[in-house]
Image 1 (cartoon, helix red, strand yellow):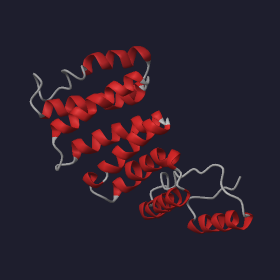
Image 2 (image 1 turned 60 degrees about the vertical axis):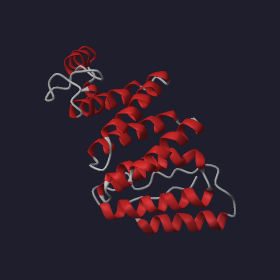
Image 3 (image 1 turned 180 degrees about the vertical axis):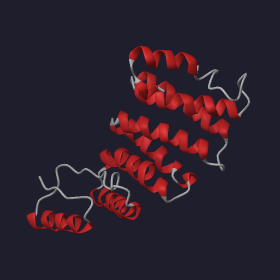
Length: 193
């Protein structure tokens, strides 16, 4: 295996030179570069761009969901409007379903919903309809943690659309926060809060 230090761009260049000199193809490619660059957003963007270039060069469709999730969900979200990130996250979701990367697919769907909710250019009813189908898929594929992340956004969308008794409480069709809090406390699962 050949590894590189993501905080050092020259390390990436050196790694590419080593792989080229070996004269063999890659049997595994991890394109999650840029996700954790310790607060250096510009370095993160450069590494994310490198990830997209590697993905394209090697036509590694099976890595597209995780790469897109990392690049568009975690890196570009610091530099670009959310509305510009929605389509790639939807592509990551759909591709993950086809390639079998269910975890990345569902996380991309949850990110799509959260960013769509925060993007003023999106129709809340459309975002909610997508979220309903995402939630069904999450239940089908037993992605309970990701579903736990999705449900508050779904209820918030309903609240913003006036489909709740009290718009200041996350309680309604998608989520009853009080019940979710009881479950989280009973199971000692703070993530679900």
